[in-house]
Image 1 (cartoon, helix red, strand yellow):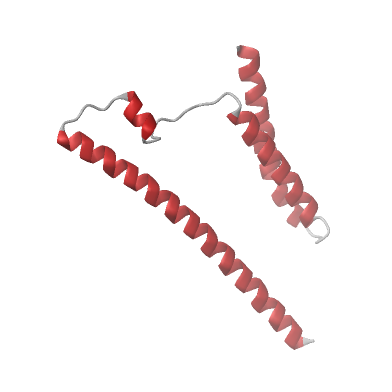
Image 2: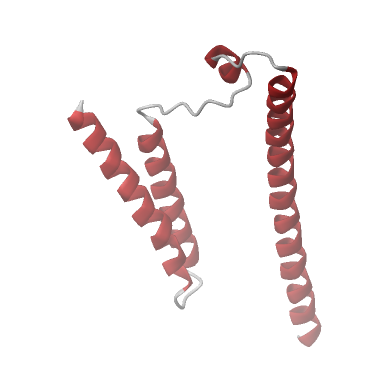
Length: 120
């Protein structure tokens, strides 16, 4: 039985390392794309060319605030929190509490989306 516990421990460590490496790789490539856009913009400024709003939009450097984005984020976080809570409940202990943070943040985003809709 001791050998099975050892393999279980190794499997969990391997899964954690693989998950972390995937997250690091995704963040690295997202950052690399942003740096490339910023370098392009810097070269345009150094060459003396005019920076127009259309150019910024084509480089995707303008933050577009869509009215539905708060609602989407809220629903995504709410569902993620519910799934985390229901996943960790059978484990026992207090691990299921990790689902409450996304649920609370999701509810806040949903409230903001409702307030924005009522404001218009």
